[in-house]
Amino acid sequence: MARVAAGPEIERLIQLLARLPGLGPRSARRAALALVKKKEQLLGPLAAALAETRDTILTCEVCGNIDTASPCTLCRDPARDRSMICVVEEVGDLWALERAGVINGLYHVLGGTLSPLDGVGPDDLSIAKLIERARGGQVTEVLLALNATVEGQSTAHYLMDRLAGSNVTVSRLAYGVPIGGELDYLDEGTLAAAVKARKAM
Amino acid sequence: MARVAAGPEIERLIQLLARLPGLGPRSARRAALALVKKKEQLLGPLAAALAETRDTILTCEVCGNIDTASPCTLCRDPARDRSMICVVEEVGDLWALERAGVINGLYHVLGGTLSPLDGVGPDDLSIAKLIERARGGQVTEVLLALNATVEGQSTAHYLMDRLAGSNVTVSRLAYGVPIGGELDYLDEGTLAAAVKARKAM
Image (cartoon, rainbow over the protein chains, first blue to last red):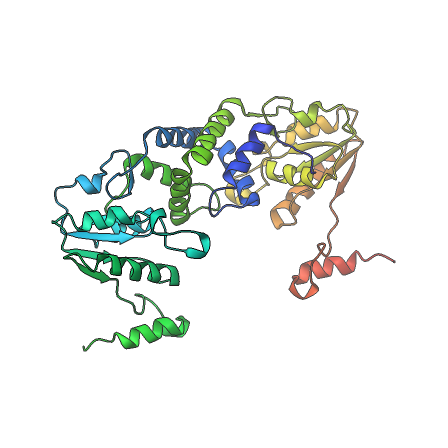
């Protein structure tokens, strides 16, 4: 066991920081030092922001988004198209689509993908609620914006089956060459999908 | 400007997290999501740890280490060899040496390196205090454990000149091949230093 140069408070802070995605034990140590060095500009405000988030954050009971109100800002927005639900795996995906500003409908966060091997079945995801929303009458399109991974796609197929009986159009994102992508660096699967879905110019 | 999917509290938290070293805007977003997802296990404890650090942390008035007491735990430790001072650039370097458990003396944190181009002169670093400590009578060795960079080494030379009049031995860390290092991947400077300082077996 290495000797400890800093007090137990700092060691505890480092251990907690190391549990954030993207930070390991070494970078957590550097982050802790940066925090202590910028006590007024960074440590204080971050402590306050975390405390405020802890006290105010909620999961939207309608769509599963994270906000300080439930239903969330997006679900309450009267300007949004209530005939379309965009289904995503995680809240991070919802945020990414919102940053792109391409979805004017509502969202639905599944909370993951089906994974029988890991014991994640339909009841572990927010699927029943999605079916209920899709059958609510207002909805005409469900866009399955799931990751282009095996898990994402098998979940999408499961959802398509479940939604088959209802009166909604089920769509998925297009596959192809990403904008700015160089063919030389793309995998065969992407290239095959891009060729298969080619468009007349 | 992209539309904001989360409330202003979350956006503020993301902005603050993005200012930590090792985290960019994208990973800060992921970190914020991880915090919100693990509200009880991570967000709460981290908020508390940051608040406690903010309220208790001090810079040691003797050596410049960071601790909840001043003089710090290391400076107060009666088991430490008071005849040796190990000089480091930053608190992170002190922590690294303590983790290795190889220094049984005291430390002195300079707070950086001399850099005339950036306007960092001797008065901007904790140099006067170091000279005063070195001349205190108890000290017989000053180990300059500065980085093996141009800035670190020119600072080391400056300190050697300043300490020349006092009755202390000034030493520096050895240069050579790092443990586990493969020659093929090492730079010419390191290899040259390792050859120059070769030892009889």
